[in-house]
Length: 192
Image 1 (tube, rainbow, N blue to C red):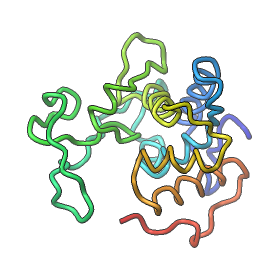
Image 2 (tube, rainbow, N blue to C red):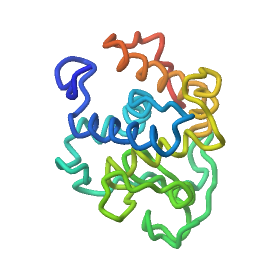
Image 3 (spheres, rainbow, N blue to C red):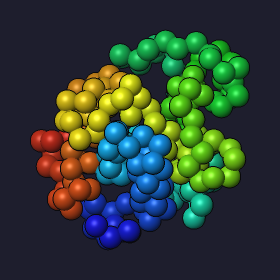
Image 4 (tube, rainbow, N blue to C red):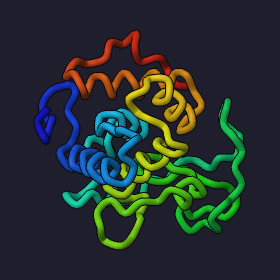
């Protein structure tokens, strides 16, 4: 596939493609048995933030123009977990509840456990596409999972978001990015 898929329904901003492919390259060295492919990271990036709002929210270095911070995880939405603050508000600005941060939507405690410096600037920043993509890959690979085994891929995505519909959406988009074929609506169940 071309480095930039900017044209068509499967368009991914070139900076996002670069971030996902960079994470694949780093993980091929750091965790070769994981067999991470950039399109899996792209599937998560699509579902979590639409690739940082189709690239409109990030500069050419993958830095977001404004932080992406989710709703407080206070149980107010159906199926939403209650997660009390784990980082003193350092990443999400909330000292009562945790909030998912960055274009790949990490809970602060998970970010702090897996944080990766994808762009090599010495800082692991959840609001940077390169860092966020690498951290996503590290999290998915944790526990020795192999992304060439479809069962292990599903387990890894489930760990990321415990929803069958979420897993189906990520897998459909990942396959779409691998093949260039837009996922059918029936392959994209509504995520509750």
